[in-house]
Image (cartoon, rainbow, N blue to C red; front, side, top):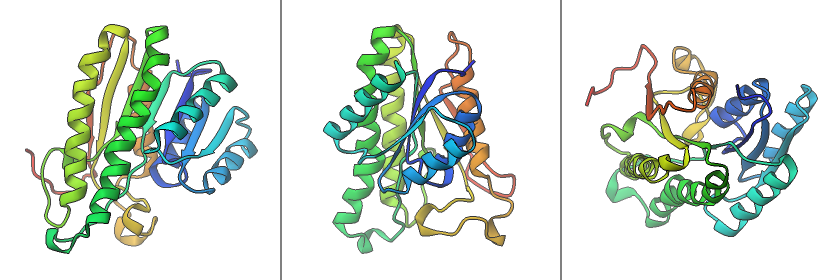
Length: 240
């Protein structure tokens, strides 16, 4: 169902975003991969070496509206359309409130909230024109409850959840679907941690989240999956 469709994946240099890129490539999608560093071109090369020719990498700041609009125009020019946006780029700082510098607070909101807004806003005219499209944002389970030492990160995920819900209501009349994937503990590089260490062996893997994205994007056009909340079995978390 996704074969020959066009997707943009932000934060695709490593971790969950890279796993999503590989999953969607295997589904036959044409991909524009977005990263904040030149590491994104290594992922582009890796996919092409595996035989996935329809892949292009862009080093772009997702919070920069002008740069994002140029990237989307280039993607559409190259691949002839746009079907799916995956807002995956995200950062987090985990400190007590009184120990959180304002510049770190601003940075988390810039990437996690402004980036989602900028990228989603930029794809809407193209999706509205064809009366179809899907926007999926990788949020977090902390969009449903709060944690200590994570005020900035938690606040951004509540914001993303509210933004996605409101946007979904605005654009459904155009056949555009908007939803979120809210993972619990994932074995990734998030917050400068190591991937594949022993303590994370029972956590979710990037491929788990990637398969959830593919599932949402592959749903019949009349179906909207608003939200998927996914946890590893070992994680104890508040129900509400």
